[in-house]
Image 1 (cartoon, one colour):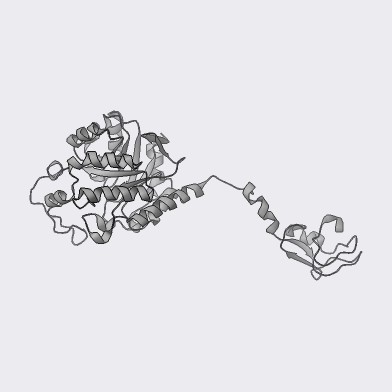
Image 2: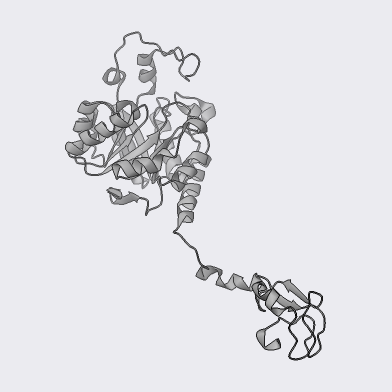
Length: 347
């Protein structure tokens, strides 16, 4: 499976990177802001905008669980239940966001976090499904998504190779025929040091499917490097402005940064090209700017060629420098003016 297609758009290494802007909770509970994020994503040139479909009650329970990561979490000390209450995208917004994104020429789909979310997204004719890292061992959800027959993009964060393999087997056995895996480091933000992009070619080899990157690092470097290693999908959290806050804003890309990701990942993909070990047709005209052997002082007929009366200079319309030793000590067949490109008939 070297490529898949989502709503007619091919995804694979033979095509420019497929860029997903993840809205997540960056709408800050404003539908108007959510639609502005869609506008900004379209203007940045991304291929798709992605939502998350859950409620606090479909993803957890109000058990009193509080996030404790010794200062390593953006959400340190927050109630998990209340965090999801703040971050979720109201289901009644989905239809309007889907319609607006399509109007803007974007693909739009979502990450469902339970089976009811899949049923709901099916009513919106979602063209694909994204499985979040924290759900990649949720086999009932995987089976539900696979049964739709839609393409599936699954992040591989916080999972062992065995767990990824099991998830892939569950998806494929339940009807998934088009699958993309995303290398993912599930820390927020992720650091370049723990991103481990060299995993991408290994995932391609093991699972024989397109692979991409769910990138939680700041900046664009990891995404560009991922494309050089074979990534064909890049997913980045997206916001209008980090300064305006929001549950995920600290590690989200702003519009200008997202536009750079679109541009630079495509340039990286174009630059990969193919193995080229000869002079390209586009380079032929530049061969004249290589060096060649020139007469540097007037030379009489019969005079020897020496380092004193010859030089290796640009342009390259004389004998190539590799003939230097062959030429030295030979005699001129006729008089040569300084500035003459040396050719075989002058020997």
